[in-house]
Length: 227
Image 1: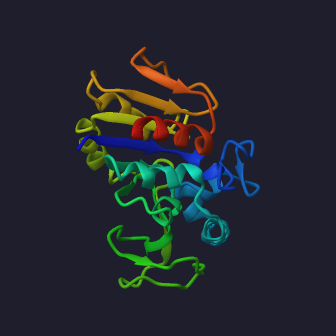
Image 2: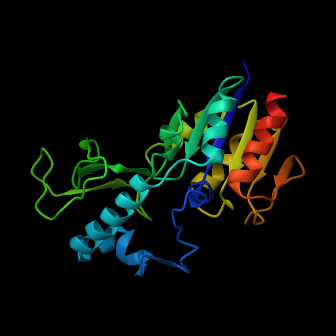
């Protein structure tokens, strides 16, 4: 069975109503990225960061998978599919996508601020100041902030090297190291990018650009592949 690796970004979640950083003009819920998505922001004002992610967690829990997520489940009937996502929501899982690797963590999890391996499931519940991990340290969102290492990038790289087809959906390939994954594909395989905007890096003519939103373009491609 052919192996399809799919890299998803914020655009696929935006089609389910979740705001992206760019849609908000460089602000998330009125906050700058430095205030709520960096380790410096966390050390400066932990309550602000927790409140921000509590809102995002609640929003994500209330959203539903869209046609793009659901089409991946259909694709799994004919192909081995691996999803590598930059998104921190669980819409892929709720759509029934069975093999999902999260590069940037998950909103539905919390972790010790001192030990990245001490992770607990919290669902849609908030994290408050004074909520502690097993090691006695403050719980923080289990998400990778800007400037932090991406623990799963090496696993993702290995997955990409085994792909018989590579699909990028909902990202203009502006965020590294995830954007760098495209350089590890085999040259001979079909490659598709589905995004209404032009990618921010130059792609070779090996790529087919479907200039549509994720919820429209991905189901279209999936139907072609299944036929």
